[in-house]
Length: 208
Image (cartoon, rainbow, N blue to C red; front, side, top):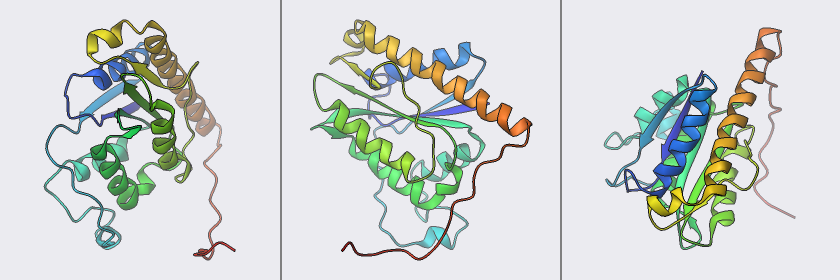
């Protein structure tokens, strides 16, 4: 089993990376392989709603950034952790642009696979940011993995994050909970328990 971790920070080894490493370490201690992808500092284009992905087999029409490569990794992954710094009480623009395109083009690659959001902040805005990221999971039938506190660390530098002992413990517990859920899903499949088929029907485009 493999969990794909995506760092939505432009800083390759900053605070968000430090939190994700703690999650990855706990997963690997439970026998789960991990793959960490850095979105990096180069631009990530926004989704423009062209719907070309529906004609391209779930591939985004833009090929000059990591999105289609991540979709390839997502196809093989069993679970996901999306990490982001907090900017003005919301996730980074790059992680949101990436997730808009990933889920719009390749939602089927994420369906029924566990997901978790991890955020880092100097001080505030963390719970609002986790809420935004969790909405990608809950529209795609993904079990949301929790921990013993909200999935966040605090600090303005990686060294400060390493002093957030509760935050790091929360990351490790998150990794263990993710590993447990993945093993439960695998055990269920072994005895014939498959993911439910979602009911389909007309879309409601208004609210009365």
